[in-house]
Amino acid sequence: MTRIAVLVSGGGTNLQALINAQARGELKNGEISAVISSKADAYALERAKNAGIPGYVVARKDYSSNRDMTAALVDKLKELDIQLVVLAGFMHILTEEMVAAYPNAILNVHPALIPSFCGAGYYGLHVHENALAYGVKVTGATVHFVNEEPDGGPIVLQKAVDILPGDTPEVLQRRVMEQAEWHILPQAVSLFCQGRLSVEGRIVTIKEGE
Image (cartoon, rainbow, N blue to C red):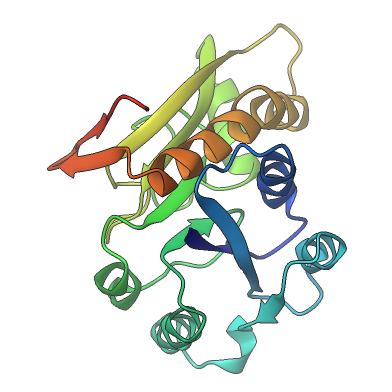
């Protein structure tokens, strides 16, 4: 059984999607063993508690730099014997120590079709504001492995979502979560836990299931 840690900073809607998938038996060969928050008051910790999942705090404010916080996170993950790290609304840039400790074993969900609207500064509502301002007709979400480049790791899964007349950033954000993020994140986690993902350069190959 693959031990999974979910890193959060806020409300934890993607965490809830993972918890729900686990309850339905969809995280095959995987178990959410810990939720680690960068804020002590994050509602995501309540979601973890309600699901009976241990919650921990590695608060950004307790460290002088992202590097120091990353080192503390790695120590906590190793202590908990974690094999897969999932970033679900984690609002801090992790330094290379995390990638070195978990090569091709950190998954992130981004609310756009990478390589569009991604990289430094593209997070939260900013992504959807930019998509609407650019006038694209289709957006979506991407689950990718994390490397040293923000949103630059190999792509695991993508799902498209139509942009509709009258969309606001808030409405679009909700639709992308409901129609894309909450589906492909649990799928990608399950594929990893089943040992069905192989990475060569930028290309992720999904092996046939049993």
